[in-house]
Image 1 (tube, rainbow over the protein chains, first blue to last red):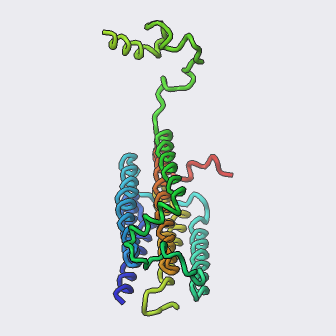
Image 2: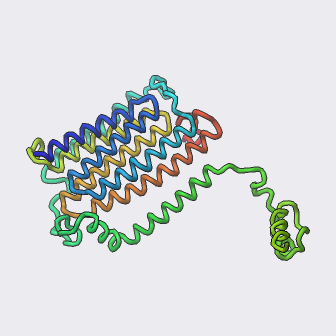
Image 3: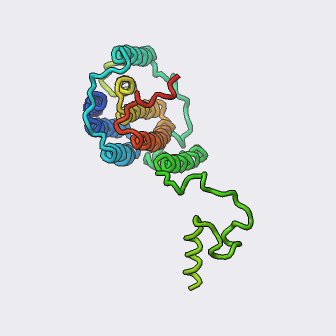
Length: 216
Length: 105
């Protein structure tokens, strides 16, 4: 019964936060409502004994992702209120409401029809992956993540690296002397290390300067 | 199964469906790209609740592992998405999703 009370408290936090995200006119308010929702989700993780995920939810989502949102909002100065009445595409809002209601109805129908659990009976699983195997949940996640899901885990590392590189490429400012058109085809006698110092064009001037300092 | 006095998986699924629908409607009606990304986060979190609920239901830690990966993908999506927003806003301030429609079919 206390679980049920906690669940409904968490659900209330989540749903008011979610409605706030959608209905706020100011993006900063949306971001703050998003934090409220994410904290509610963390509460529900605790109810289900997923303590590690609850902590990660707070640290990564509320602590990193929403802060990133707020940084971008503040940096771009787009924190002006949006007029929610403007409708560039005619009938967009009624259509969106109909589609959302249909989606909700479909999902609820599936949940209510599947009365003996939507996944059917659970196989008597691997004790390594059982939630009652005596490990704490962080040990359990660690053991499975670094054995069965090792390749996927490595791929997430690659994914994060690619995302960082992509973000840098997307947001860097291209200066005039960075343009690819300024590059000359490389041939052996234009390489700076092979040519005498000072014989290069002006793009290599600072490299030549460095050499001069090194000699001095 | 519904309205049971103890907490069952269905409670989580219903809540998750509500949250996902709110996120989807928000994605369709909002025009500020930042708020649209927040609505995507709402939908991802709705799915995370489902993963943990089903993981508890079938007594398997795989649900929690899935949440972990969803979290990583969400973080990546936000990084790239916000980089796009910054890049678009550098060219024209106050761009909404409707202003960036050259690729529309």
